Image 1 (cartoon, rainbow, N blue to C red):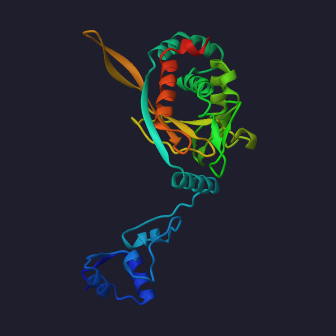
Image 2: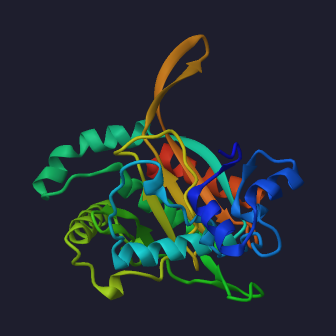
Image 3: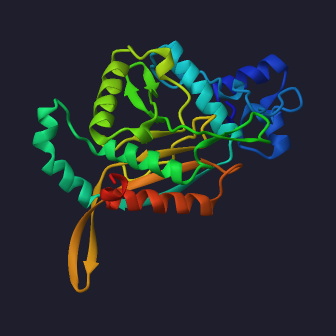
Length: 291
């Protein structure tokens, strides 16, 4: 029995191509073989070529299959293309949300009277909308040939919603012109209708930037993928209590981790740092965005 380690699919390809896999392994001085090692008749996988991943998983144990929905297939193709073609960088930061939590507690009864739940996400949308106005290069898109920057005179915020049918990103239009109560109502409405697959086509697309909020699930940081033609995306994870020192006195502070992924063709690290500095200051002192 051969002592060369190779997957069933690699051995099948070797057989189909008439390659003696043991002799080829000895020639290369290898103990493991993949399809790229079979010689000129089996070229290395090229970008976009997924035949290299064609593995007979059932050869290793019991498996079941589950078809991907059409919606999920389209999303997968778009995300794969974005990750492959855009040079993305993620800037990590965090913001003190003590003031936001106090306001949410203070306004809880008022929110209930309006039939709303005032979530931290509404504050994030408001802060992001105002920061996009302050940093117009983030509120832009690149032309397909990456030679022209298209600056937008509107601020639309996409809200990523995890649904049983895949990720949907409905959009809040003109978010910079709306107050907390209206933003809270729209976020709740879009999330509910996204779960029920009742989002209309004109409620998708055209966002200035999107938010991917994992705060209700967990995590300390992640690297969200830019959703072209947007130039950046903001990720949010679970708020954590961080000890800060006030002189010699330790003080527990709720800090929310933030992750800004951006297209390095149009934006650089200094841009991202300034953008996030502005955003975190608005979140720390929400009075600045309510004037």
